[in-house]
Image (cartoon, rainbow, N blue to C red; front, side, top):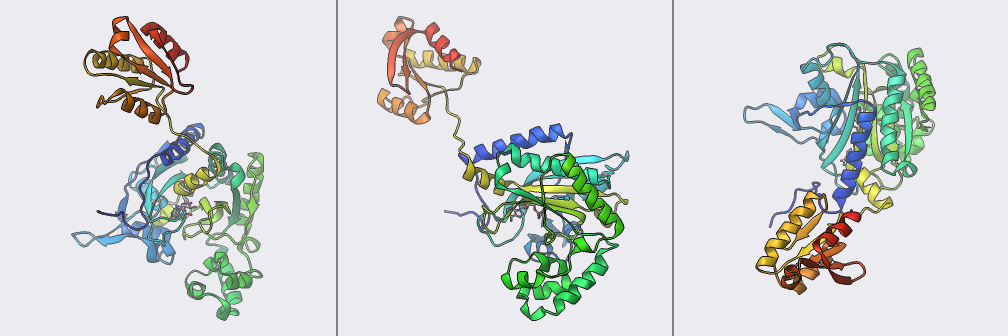
Length: 417
Ligand code: HAM
């Protein structure tokens, strides 16, 4: 017997009801916000990610599924959707004509992380990217779409939006120096990972969850207090537009996203209900990425929702039950089977969900199956009743049954549709 690969999952049964509900909510929202779909490959040249996401990020450094193809070229399973979307945007010249392009995608992503609750090696993201606007209103309207989704699937009260600004290439270098100077004084108190981060990616020290690191960063200089004029205005505008759009938020000046392409706006939907996997989704502005990947200078902002975590949360706070057939048709060998198949066919034409036992075992066995199917009615097509143009009609919920005409049977069922 084979077992699935570590960190991968089979999704089936009742769980898919939650997936469908979430996907339907997304479909409704992308229509409302006029966002168009894009389907991008699962496999890209490794450089799309290493350059796009950043060499010094955890994702690129240690989490990608990368292999050399037969011709020696390095390929990687996509760990996220933004870099690939931007690659496709440039390659297909989607920036012509120069209007705002609003794209969404949904599908599997792969990161070789340590699997735990809410953290898998294959997981699903729903992502949205708005390419072509620098305006804070664009950020705010995209964030409105983001938060609307959680409300739509009933998670509004169980998670909250955090926002931050991570500066830009103009103000960040000076801030970084300030931060490194501060952190260096406490280097011996930092965890092993943060000691490395201090030189490679010092901002990441700010959102380390280790207590000793948290104690150090408590008084660290923050980006939000060291912004250039433009970033400062952008952040103020963002807050203004979020308020106008009725989006509630908390400012978390310690939030640093795990991907290097962000500038200015950063945001996450967080919950305390999933242990370490606290982010149900996140995003931000990435004005430099299109150029970095070889395209023109085009600003952009986007987000990705972690669908597996959303589904895990939905399962905690609401119960969805499987759809049952309304009718189970019970038949016997011979004429009864033919008549039963005709009834089954007619019910489906009337848009009524119905099932039959393909193996035609005895009455007792079929009634058991009818019970297990959850059907409300059983239509028992007995030879005797059939010769009178009737069937035995059983209400499975209150265990009452009587012989009625075919017409009556269709009438009752249709009234209950
Ligand atoms: P991210 O924060 O790396 O952002 O991932 C977005 C969401 O994906 C996370 O908040 C989380 O819910 C989910 N996620 C990440 N890793 C895992 C995992 N191993 N197992 C389960 N769920 C996971 C991005 O990926 C950016 N591309 C978002 C973005 C789009 N920024 C701009 N545009």
